[in-house]
Each structure stands twice: as structure tokens, then as C-alpha cells.
Amino acid sequence: MTTTARDPIAAVREGLAEFTVEVPSWAYGNSGTRFKVFAQPGVPRDPYEKLADAAQVNAYTGAAPRVSLHIPWDLVDDFGKLAAHAADLGVSIGAINSNVFQDDAYMLGSLTNADPAIRAKAVAHHVQCIEVMRATGSKDLKLWLPDGLNYPGQDSLRDRQERLADSLQQIYAAMDEDHRLLLEYKFFEPYFYAMDIPDWGTSLLHCLALGERATVVLDTGHHAPNTNIEFIVAQLLRQGRLGAFDFNSRFYADDDLMVGAADPFQLFRIMHEIVEADAHLPSSRVNFMLDQCHNIEPKVQGQIRSVLNVQEAVAKALLVDREALRQAQLAGDVLGANGLLMDAYNTDVRGILGDLREEKGLQRDPIAAYRASGYQERIAAERVGGHQAGWGA
Ligand code: AOS
Ligand code: ZN
Ligand code: ZN
Image 1 (tube, rainbow, N blue to C red):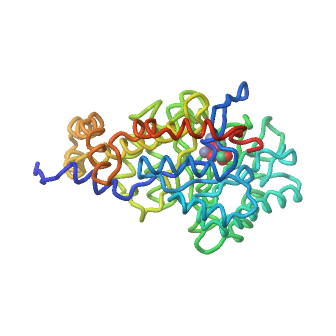
Image 2: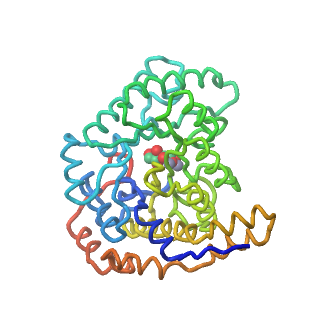
Image 3: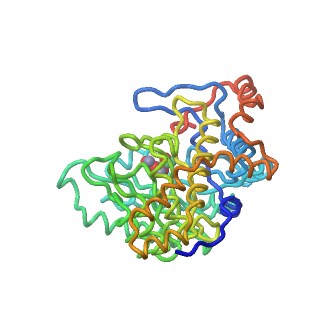
């Protein structure tokens, strides 16, 4: 076996140089479960303050320059002004998330509803989101479809797919040439017998029918337990249709806990597939987003921790000696290949990442730096009457 001289630190430095994570506006508002929403002091009272909090995450990590918005939770009178506010804070507007899950009209479906008037209403909402994209400079329209059935026979599975295909085509046709559609899937909830986009295969089929600018969103919490998510990543990358991640952790269902908290090894395996395909580079256009709620932990710190967890997983993936791995794989060296992966995973990269932050003029420990900054105490004193992340925010 030949060995090539490689500098692991340089590999991590180069690999992470342009790697960024997009944060969601809804992570900063109050959140909880259907049992209780816990109010935290200092949560944002409007989208402007959500952007201010998100900008803190970018300021301390240097790696979170975009913020996803959600319509209507982040509705403002002047989206140009909101985008300018973001720019002043050193961030920009990322994906625009639509919402077809909070309107009474959608009880039996939105884009799949048997009633053409309700489908038209749902399509019109997406056209409204496209207007927001134009006003904010966003290029990604993200669609999570909550539609589904609770009972066998309730509606025709096939007819719903046809209606969905038609609705999606109308949305796709309304987008600009440089817009992308990010189509998310989820295997259950809010309906439990059959979701209309339950899996990556269904999402991919709709994307392939729509055109090149339609891509799949992989939310890590949207799979049955023990699903091999890195396999899905590899398959979507082969097709050039992995548009984005919604990162989070799950222990049981769609828990939306901090990414890397439940299963850092799974996150590493996912990132290994990403790095193997050079999909961590901006040219791949994979948007690495967080989709999380911080119900009991401080929100800005929870977001910073999440960005660090993703960076650590990418750094470990970058440490994998790809050349040696390839040779071990081709030689059928099962344990050698597995050992190369585990060596990288078991490396403590926190020191390297601290060094790289210092090189960029950032503090080594973003969480400690944020805690020492006094920002949290300031917003707690200044902001009174902050909102719940979704309802009414
Ligand atoms: C829902 O389960 C999804 O994960 C979504 O991505 C949802 O669109 C997001 O939480 C914002 O509404
Ligand atoms: Zn999601
Ligand atoms: Zn989800």
C-alpha cells in the first residue's frame, strides 16, 4: 500500500474554509410540545429581532451567514427592509419556508386536496412565498407538505399524487430561472396512515418530473428508526438532487433536538458521504440547514452548539484518508477500511477547530465567548413579550 503525504490539518482548513450552515428563524422564538410551550426571557418580538439573534450565531461561529424565513410566521410589511436589516447584521436571507399546515381549509390536504379551490389557495400561498424570495434575494423555496391520510380508503392515494404533481408544476412554473424548489419528505405526522410525500423516493420522483431546479430536502428526523440515512445521501448525490438538509437530532420521532446530540456517529457517517462527493463545497449547492427547536435550552447557545457539532462532523470526515480508504476498499480489506473511518471519527477535532477559528480572528470557544458577551442578559432586559416560534409569531 502506498502512502501519500497528507496534512490532515490543511485538509480540515481547506475543507471548512467555505462551509456554512443556515439557521432557521423559528429556532429563536419560544417553542415546546403540544403539552407546554416554555417562555424564555429575551426571545425575539419580531423577525428583525430573530435576525439579530441569528447574527450572533454567525458572529461567534463565522459559519452561519444565512437565515431561513418562514411565511407567514415572518411576515413583514417590507421584505426589502428586512433583507437590508439582515445585510447590516452581516447575514442574508436563506430559504423561504412555506406553510400549508395551519389553515382550517387544509384539514384534508392542501396541494393534494380534492377541492380545486383549496389547491389553488395552497398554490397561491407558494406564489406569495416566491414574491418574498424576489424581495429578499432568496433563491430557495422550501416546501414541506403536511398532507396525508389518517384512514385507509379516506381518499385515493393515486389521485392525490396526480393532484400533487399538478400543483407542484404550477409552483415550479411561477419560480424564476435562478430559483430552486427544495422538496422535503416526512414519513408520518401530522397524518399517520399515509403521508403524500413520505419518503425520498416520492420527493425525488416529483423533482425529476418538475425539472433540474427541483431538489430533495433531507430532514434527519423524518425517517423510521434505524434508517440508513447516509445511503439516501449517497443516492441523492448520485442523481444531483440533494438540495438541502434539515439537520436535527431525534431519539423517537421528529424531535427537532440539536444536531449531533443524539447520534454524532450518524452525523459523521452522513458527512463522510458528503465529503467523499465533495458536496461540502459551495459549488455543490447543498444547503446545510438546521431545523430545530430549543424548548428547554437557551436558544442562541443551542444554535451555536449545533453549528459547532456540524463543523466537528465535517472536520472528522475531512480527516478520513480518502486515498488509503479507497485502496483498502479495492483490496477488500474490510477491517482496514473500517479502521480508517473509525480513526477519523475517534479523533478529537476541537483543538484543530479552535486553532482555525483563531486564524480567522474568532474566539476559540464560541459558546464561552457568547456567554461572556452579555448579549443574553441584554435581550432579556430589553425585550418584553417575545413570541412563540410558530403560532402568532
Ligand atoms: C416539519 O416537520 C418539517 O421538518 C419542516 O421542515 C417545517 O417546514 C419546518 O419546521 C418549518 O415549518
Ligand atoms: Zn424540516
Ligand atoms: Zn420536521
